Length: 291
Image (cartoon, rainbow, N blue to C red; front, side, top):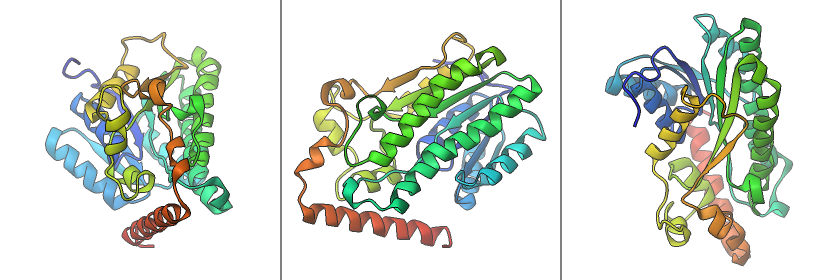
């Protein structure tokens, strides 16, 4: 679909770029000639991803171990990147989410999602955007949101609230920063299976079962479909496109709402089992990060 070298000369930061959707997008941009920067809380994971992608495609991938909930750490990372030249594009992909009855949520549980998705996304966008403006640089921001920004979803309220904020940021800054040559758009993907999301959103079930039953196209999304849309949005093919959130879900949100309403039938025992599974996964992740 895209010409070889389409993104040559571009410098792109992908948050949450060490795994999952972020890794997939970073790989596509690298293959098209861009210089890539990825960040995540586990620097070792990002470094392994950087080595893997450079081994497959050549080019340059730089890894940072940064918790985007820390505004000062974000600013230091972005400053370090800009020291060797400005970024041209930012992909806001880092996120966190888990299913829970809202009455069972603690403030800490709410903050675990909101501090990454809402606060962290703003911190990165602000750190990059103000440097673009100060330096007179054009730029693109693409943020990954969810279809629930349009219709809400029970049992993932912290994510819905936070992603809706990112959707609103996209519309707001698209108009505020347009005269600087800065575009902001967002993608609301349906289910594209990744390990982290499936363990917290579908504990005890296969990551594709629910979508394959209910999706009008009878399948989940493919990473190349997200890669292609993200590439289009940061390319020079349609510079008048800004402030938009594009749904990529095979029509599922139109057909079913594409949310977690069906979990209303769960029993207390099922919720307790899901909570235990998510807690176990969180403890495993903390152990891998060294605490």
